[in-house]
Length: 81
Image 1 (cartoon, rainbow, N blue to C red):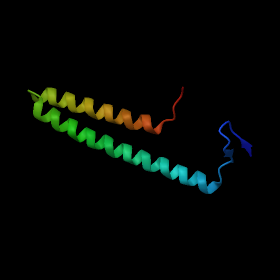
Image 2: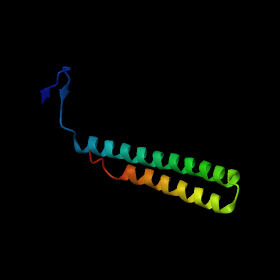
Image 3: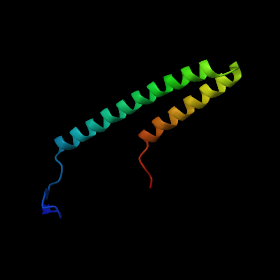
């Protein structure tokens, strides 16, 4: 144990605390995926209703799916900076 600059004792996390934080990360990931699905559904609806022809609607739908999949992959992969 050691004191940080704020005077709070920093202790190593126990296995139970690590499991709790990992569970919180999984819940956060699932909520993020749900929000991405909701956003995708709204964007797909807009593309279908506002596109002037079917080829444009299909292209916009493909773009929406790729962007949402990219957002999910970004959540899964660890940051590399």
